[in-house]
Length: 272
Ligand SMILES: [Zn+2]
Image 1 (cartoon, rainbow, N blue to C red):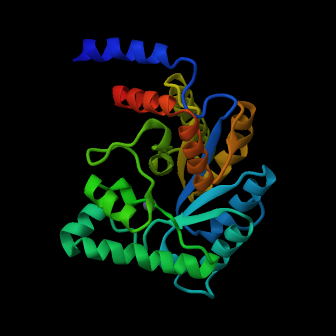
Image 2 (image 1 turned 120 degrees about the horizontal axis):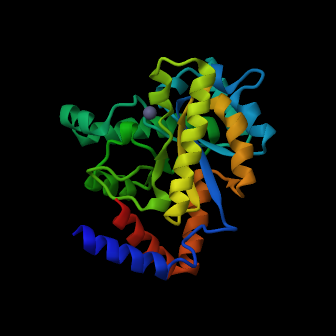
């Protein structure tokens, strides 16, 4: 099997060496931040929203509905600010329960209600119903994904034992939450995160992917890492778009060059 995969990899890589979807000069990154809104990270001098504004970068925030319950609270105000500055607000469920555990405990209907509760809070805030759900802990399986899609959502995820996600549309885990737990000082953590993200992107570029959905969390170290990461990635030719725009761009690229999409799917499968 290994030899067959290697041979096919060489053939496919050669056949599509001319470029896959989102190849230069079409290089895009969707910066996404989970588990907010956290006003202590988003707001204030050099808050994440100021950092993003300073680099004219639009991002996507996957908020948890329960943090938006109090319309007079600071989290709600921070979320409102993010929306008014042009960032995209999407759905990370109401209570952040992992789907598998919640499904086993309460049944699937509970999950749909949890997602709808979050969508209602976000729609009240932005006037727009979220169209993308990122399952907490990436706990998802194919049947559940299809049910969410039937309800009008796209699912932001990565390939796990339960689903297959092509390279170009998979979530890239920056592992900031793991680094956050490590016994290092703040500057060392930021540097590690910076290096890790650049390494992951370089690896993905070697596999022909010039579009990346980067998953961060609303942590102070991630905010600080952005200060150096955004300009460095811009130097490499990347533009920053919301996840909705990223997926739409991909969709139009796919329609333009369906053969490249097939190549990308194949390559993604070979590398798994
Ligand atoms: Zn989360």
